[in-house]
Length: 143
Image (cartoon, rainbow, N blue to C red; front, side):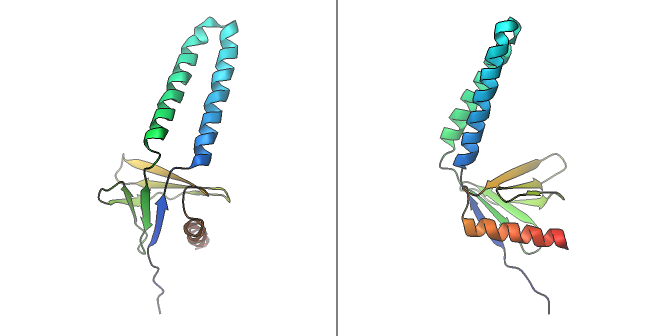
């Protein structure tokens, strides 16, 4: 008797922990480039680039704070992803994924050139959904 799996639905929201890590990274890089600018004035360009990147990241994260993404792992192994109120897009999983106790990175490919990645931390989805995803990924690796 073959055992079929039900589709695994994961509702993703924006991760506060990831946003904090990225703000810390921008602050450290900005501090470092400011320190180097004292010795090499040409590094002022790097300060402007890092500042613009930080501003862009802050504005984008504030605008997308209520956005939700839904990822569905079908029983046949295909993935469907929906962002916002639109239709689902079909994706094929890339052969490798990263699965640690605090972070899961899933890679998807829609066509030869269109790829996307989803970073899943413990705070941007339901803990039960995240546990089931990690268990199912581990079972696929062991096969």
